[in-house]
Image (cartoon, rainbow, N blue to C red):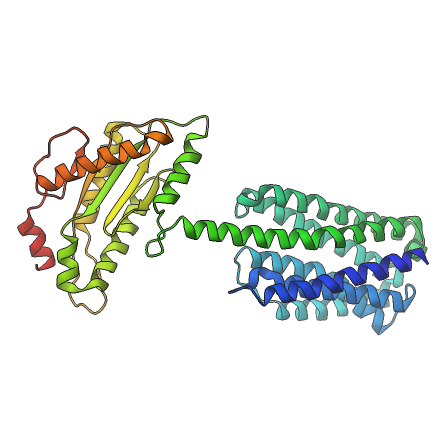
Length: 404
């Protein structure tokens, strides 16, 4: 009687959160972060437990076959939903249909040749295997695609491990004691239902928390990024520099301030769409040229910035020169134009700075070096406090490239 009440409460929890997940999914764009899949998973598991209550005990029937299929289809659906949450485009109904048909056939074969005990033991073993795969996926995710959710993923791994262990124990009890081990009011089944009821209370709000966390992270990221280039904006750069200098191994840092030469002329001659293509191209080269631990941003119309960490002055100057020469040598495909454009950039490099509050001074130093380079003919790299050098291309050469 107590076990039946626990299972009924478990079904109520699952159905309520299934409706909630479905409502949330309708408010989310794109792949809906897998919330529609989680809703289906809850519905499948609730249906399996309802059939178990109606069935009353182990038996060989169509209802029993459907019950076992639903019991295993639920964790498979959760796994697919988690993949959707992390941006993988996976379908739901086709894998579920194939799985249910295959497992239904397998149940019939096992029941025919080995009996009911083997069929129920197979259910427990398959459930343990599916949850074990989920644990491995979570552990892999912590090290790769879900590093930003480390704490949450470890929490889920612990909870899923509990289900895996209980199903493995159920498998061993069935092998040892037969179908009597599945009696609803047995001590083991009571522990199993209590644990599942606890999960039904804890996991759904945790999933909602993950969705809220991801949405707020996305909003924060949007607020810190330039929409045209996806580079950091001034606010994003400041926050990233603050995080960098809060680490123990922070080293002297340099600012590269880069400006596209004669950008207004490009806009006036070829139109703003051409100017936008040039900006996107320069941003792409900047992102590809800088090292993985450097910070890249766009802080003005044609003005870009890079924060070089873990470097010395000569290394930064070499990096800046490679950036300048790469941009100067590459052609830029512009929509609705037969001929590609070329552009050059002037780069000012600051002296080293050592803390967040020195960032503005470093930006001013780099800006002064940048204007020194512009006064000296553009298309060059100038270190703060250094006189301008001979430009690599004259205005006439640049005009030849862009036909201005």
